Length: 176
Image 1: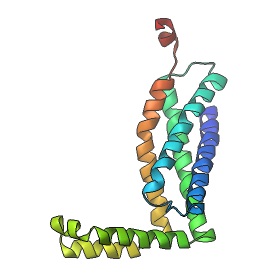
Image 2 (image 1 turned 90 degrees about the vertical axis):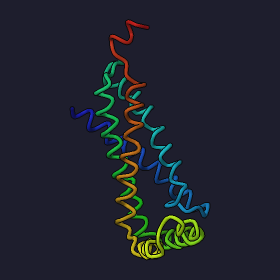
Image 3 (image 1 turned 60 degrees about the horizontal axis):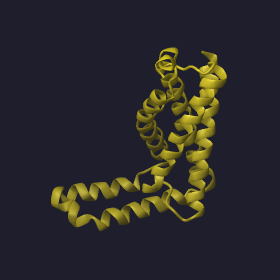
Image 4 (image 1 turned 180 degrees about the horizontal axis):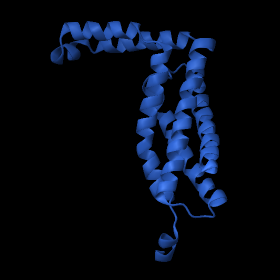
């Protein structure tokens, strides 16, 4: 059990670092890393599951991994990756560049304002104004929580897929 925890921790931290470097690269390229461009960060984390599960299967489990083992390893790795990624982003937004959050608020306001007529067709003016006001109250903690739970839940689906694809048991080898 210790090796599941240890290796999922190490691969989770590595995955978080890769995603955080992508976050920094987006800032360098003047792309809002808190906006719609986050999707590629999800893909990066997802891509890290395959080599991690493969390495763990080959080097620690003798080339065989059952689905529940892959699911446990991938879920732990996902948890650590999401946790450390959100902590790194929070640290960056509070200590190094708080302007990124302010820019995100401004871009979000401009986007919502540009959609005002469509929004008012389905919702009330009060709801629209409430949405704009809520953007002012976004904190670094909100961003960190959002990064953690959305990424964790979305990637959990891909953990299941990766665990299913990477499983290799005695039974599956006999069928091949």
